[in-house]
Picture 1 (cartoon, helix red, strand yellow):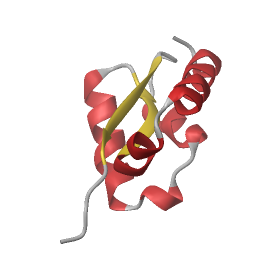
Picture 2 (spheres, rainbow, N blue to C red; picture 1 turned 45 degrees about the vertical axis):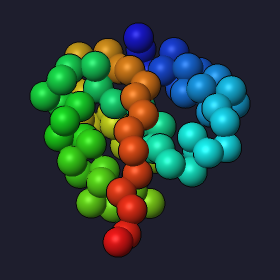
Picture 3 (cartoon, rainbow, N blue to C red; picture 1 turned 30 degrees about the vertical axis):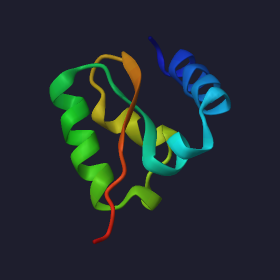
Length: 76
């Protein structure tokens, strides 16, 4: 999907998500390309607060995006 479609999909996902899901998982837009997505997520996890929806654009070479969720890191 293109970036605007991904943004809408993320908005819907967040609206429909249970509060516990929002507390336990990151919901982000990433490049659809697996290698680009992996690099984005790796960098995102280093400093989540410095990323926004637009951040994924600089990792994407083909304009195809997806919305993914993954477990937040917990400080032990």
